[in-house]
Image (cartoon, rainbow, N blue to C red; front, side):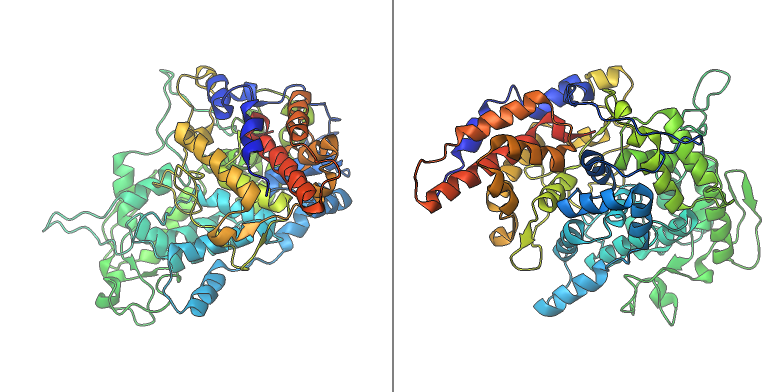
Length: 575
């Protein structure tokens, strides 16, 4: 059998450490600057792209932003339907349930839930599910509304339910999403407001403020007042204006009292987690009026007067309505979704257009997530190839998206049918895994800029670089080298036979062109193409050799070509 030595020799010809180039020289160094220009998309008077059928590279690029990666089939589908119809079709597709799938897995094993059950289900759907737009939205939303299985108090069954909820609400209304996130027991546990009790002057007890702070800071309005285009509003001294104070946190925390586990027969015991119902991990939390504050609650300019009668549901509605209607929400959430799908540094105009759609979908509806997603993906800044040539445009591909991209592009299958890819969160692996961030701040903050780089000097951000260091760079390269060649997961459960690529491997140029379409959306630079072709040619085909030996050599060519493409700066930065 052919060894993987050619992979090392091929990579040795690469001009310098891959990720180090990106970190040191910013996105400009990772752009594939001599990739051929594509035709500019025509624009309508309202700024949206005029519908026309995309070319294969344009379809591949759109699918890179909107899914876990293009395939031959999805490129063909998009080219036949066009962008708008494809979006309509995707949003209409039913979603599969992680909770149901993980429940079936443990029933077959006759064991308890564990985080691995959810992770297997995640990979199954990320790689194979047809509702790819929803799959990408679930990931994006999970990085804003964070819970984490790293916290041992988060139950795997509940985490699967939480991820399902994000999918169900991906194209609904943000107000519904906000309430569902707030009342999910996993959020209640993770940010410690489940079982939160009213203040007690006699003992000095005050309500827990954790969720009150984070729902404002991370999930709705952010730290500072924003203009519609996401830029900071400044006071007369030129300083940012805080959106909330410690008093606002305190006032909101009193609203967030008196909710705990679902029970058909709520009592003091069930409030404290006793006699837990079988649906307590997955059913929305319910109010327990006895434990809800009746004192005055002042926050964000709203005052809920003191009352003799506790009204946890009414108070929560006022609080969530107040947050939902805050002018910051459109630019704050819109910009983060742009960052997750399209580019780390959207222009203020791009953010402003998306925020305007959040504020009004054109039919007087605020918070229409389907309209927001359309606005993000169809905006000229997302679709115009000329804009994509700007060295400040693009984003670092998330590590788990890269792995799913490989699996989808090369039709990987699961030998067991269970998609047994374990957690990849270790920094010696991908440094990221679904619902396994180290804190409520996700794996990377939206405003992170790698210090000491051109990016930070220019005031640009690159969120995903927060998990890029010497160890994670090596971890990614080593993981992908083994995965491309032998598969990944228990007993190499997930692997590709590379049937199409093997047919092209005798023609290095044709192989490079296929990798260009599936992995780089037709943007491969002439330099990278030449390097890949030379490396592939280095894997010599034996003259008149027996068939198994020739097949092994062809397989080695495919491995080298894919590996060098996925290790290149041009691939690591999504353009």
